[in-house]
Image 1 (spheres, rainbow, N blue to C red):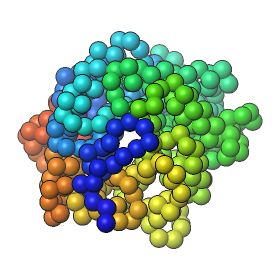
Image 2: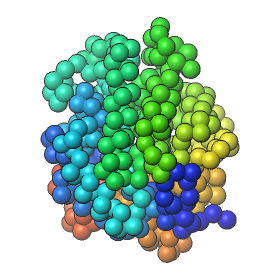
Image 3: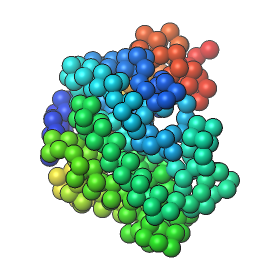
Length: 357
């Protein structure tokens, strides 16, 4: 029987010490230009010290045009490299494998940050977004690849492409709105093309010991379940991935728009080749993690549980009855768990059920 304590091996890169990953979580602790802050390094290092097998950064913009929110991490230029090197060194010293999540906001980028209209697969005046040309798309593929190379040079063990939650890569996969009449829209093959090109580019530009992951939303954001399953199947079958992470919001949820069983059931049966499959969404106890593994996942990604326990992974590995402290918690608890002021303020504004008072 699989266990959260089990080490996890991959075709490329190091073995994770267990099957628990820190989910990539927006925390708004970076400097305005995307450089890492001491608070963000401390937040992530604490989770490595707390025995997570993989510690992943928040979504990091790969180009200035993809910068979405204030306090977002960047991996877009040489200016970002000193902080990234510090973080990679700290995570390795604490025994965790490390990854940068590569991100472009697409139509969700903000003009007040980027100084320009947002880039998008289609014209979207309501979001101050303009359709990308083929040359724009090719340049963006190159931006993702260059960012992965920077992450490798900084000392990270790998990267994850952010293809979930309706950001740029997910916008191309949007069945309902991406009706481009060129090679990047219309058919499912065309909608997936940019993802395939970025995967191929990153794999070709980085070393044999560098891990490559992809995060997808299995449904929603304009993607029906049938297309989400096909995107996942193609990614797992590509021979390019070390892991696919599915952002389920709640691992116990049913499909939103019909479909039998639970959402997870529509993916754990897919052939994986040499890739691993992970799931994320309200994993708040050892029992939750074990349930996911018993369902057929290879690893679990933990978000809220890791906010309220920097050592969630260590506790879950050691105690089959462990469960995260209930929400809401006080700001003092979050400070003790090594969240900085900017992260606490973000949670208070965005997730009022997390913080008491």
